[in-house]
Amino acid sequence: MTRLPLSLLSSLRHSSTCLLLLSGTAMIHQANGEEWSRFRGPNGTGISDATTIPFNISKDVIDWSIKVKGIGHSSPVVFGDKIFLTSVVHDDSERFVLCYSTTGKKLWEYKTKFTAHALHKFNTFASSTPAVDAERVYVSWTTGDRHEVLALTHDGQMAWSKDLGFFAEEHGSSSSPVVYEKTLLVGNDHAAQDGGYLAGLDVATGDEKWKIQRHAIKASFSTPTIYKPENGPVQAIFSSNPVALTAVEVETGNVAWEYAGDFRKDIRTVGSPVIANGIVFASAGSGGSGKACVAIRPNGKDGKPEVAWELDRALPYVPTPIATKEHLFLLGDNGTMSCINATTGESIWKERVTGETYSSPVCIDGRIYCISRRGEMAIVAASPTFTKIAEYNFESPIHATPAVSGDRLYVRTEGRLISIGKHSSENGQEGADAN
Image (cartoon, rainbow, N blue to C red; front, side, top):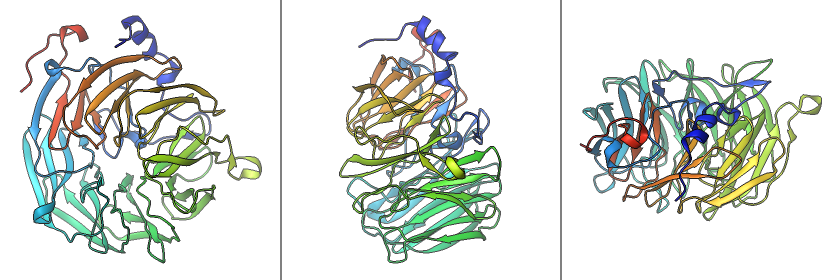
């Protein structure tokens, strides 16, 4: 195993490769340093500027590891000193929203019954990641043939719940909600005849602010991202099939633009759209691999979206990419990562970094953390030069994407929640035994 020299790590920390997302015409909505408040953190980028999280993972840098009731593929989210996630006990048809302190103490659980429906063998009834703001934690999930959204206070009390209507999909659901200011963004693209809808809900009440009828071919498991043009209202970008990208004005629900793409009828979107150097990228696939993608400039000639470049191989299906200012790092479901030029689509390198994966990578201080379905973590440099930094095996299945908050990395395995942050002498500080 090759470890990255500390001198190179230092230079990476100041490299433009480590800078977050957009140039020129767009910006992202950032959370503060203590918040990882939605799937993949600030605007779904999966990027953290934390500088003290270890890159050589061992038991010496594990703060705590606690057993979580049931199972689930939802990722943890963090707000202040609280961690939220969802879980399910399938045999009892019980589902939970769980809250822990960042010290590993369980604070509360919210329990509800659900009605089972068709589900992919690798999915669960707790696969959608919550979203959280200063007032409430929001959960979107399906039960029977219905799509539900609920909001809980930070102490676990029901604030409101809403039935979003009919839902039909042979593989279940997992699209996660997103909060932008006073609007909760929810995608409900599914395989029914009417194809579902997109909705913006009032975060305080759950009332519909707007609703857009859809005509989807396949359910979308993708989570929206926020886009801020140089001129004009903030937009939420959804990816689905057959309309590959839809940009909706967050406040009004007006469709700002759409790009159809050429997604086949037999593929679906699971990984979420990302933005790099002003280019919006999304992919779709089936059968464990990406089959098609779109890479478009929202404001091309005549102000209409236009194709920036095309790519027909080495595409992700489930994992969402890491997008820096200059590069896209695409982690395929088979564990192979590709680094490409975000502006031109030119391939820079392609290497196998881990085993088969459903977890999306996160980037911390210029290092990309990738985790396989079997729990194998590989850490590589977010660089145009491929370098594997370190490896670690959690020895437990992992489908969830890690969360980063403050100086801690939170990893959810099939049955546990783990906090990583203590520093061994190799990482610059004294280590301690794991709890």
